[in-house]
Figure 1: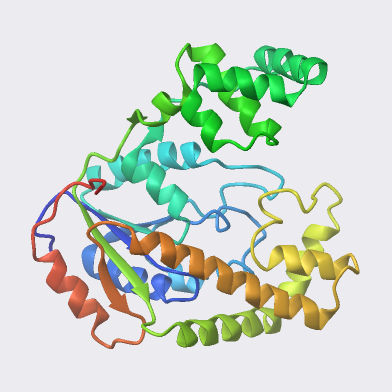
Figure 2: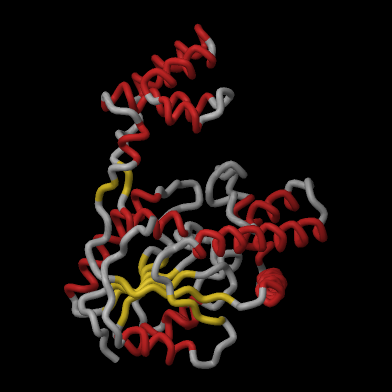
Length: 318
């Protein structure tokens, strides 16, 4: 199978438990493709069961990227993903292969396709100075200063939110420009045409059923033991992004005695449903997406048909 528009990038979106992995692997086999994971939990080593990470058997013969690249104690930002994914796409295309990006972390997709805001990195000296002023004069004074230099940001940021107020003032001091202006100036948008697909059941009840089944399967496969191994390390805590991942947070609270086993299971399933709802809400506003029903037997045929048609670079629709 060949793409009508070449070179191009394929993106496969969808809520958790919708069937993205299986479709991407089948597609990669037919397209001589390489898969780039777009998932903020699959980046972590030692977190396989609770993230439904593709097994080594599933990955057999298909290069997978951005799996197991971080320790759970580390953080990984959207800008780092954009940098790494862009570099991988270039290398995959240079090999004559097709990049297939698959996952449900829509913030990562947004960073890659639209580019990142041109905000300056945080500066410890400026932040220390602003913190001193906060402690000395109070948050109301700093929020008023923000209203003078960036009224739109001040309107968006609650007067009782010190973290965002300080960041907006820091950006202004470092750049001499309002954060509102810089946010609108994105850099590094993906410069290749893309084919976009979203996989999801047509009925929400069916997705909820799949989520509950997956959680039960994870428990049967040893999810508790996986989190216990992280728990015993003593250098991890529930405020880390890895441990805040859906399922891991609830199991962590079970291990600390804060939840019963049944409550852990119920809250884990509910949190996964909420994640799926957020993913679907984001996707419904996404431009130029071809939707595929999870339970359709001809998903691959639909994808093939779309790939025979021309496509264009990603563009944000108003």
